Length: 119
Image 1 (cartoon, rainbow, N blue to C red):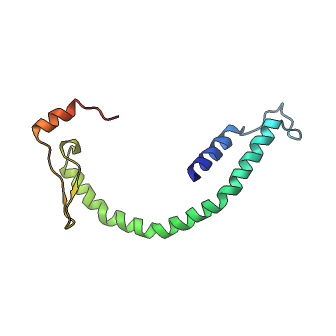
Image 2: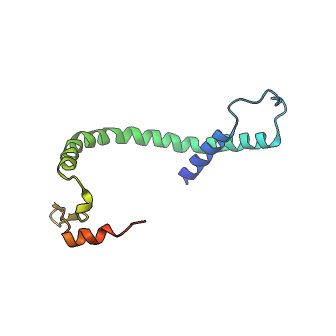
Image 3: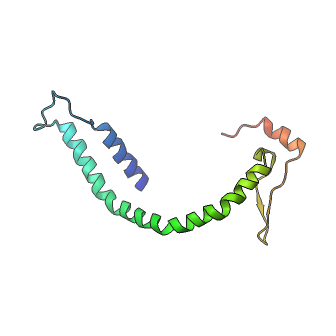
């Protein structure tokens, strides 16, 4: 829901002219301009609490995400260097003990998957 409101607010903001034409009288705006301005102001007022909450959430998550990137980033880079083409492998399988297995597809499976198109 928040995404819809935010997208709508952005669309309205982009739809409003950056600068009024010289022929438009600023003291007497049209009904469409008044309506758009009121809609945009209302959306901003409704979104302010959600945006404040998002700021707090991002401040809480930042240290954890930073640590994740520092620890997992190099390992992921090594994995990407070793595995050239992920389409040659099945989806990862997680075992009950926590091990992760990447099974390579057989030649038959690779030939069969070349003709398929995922939409």
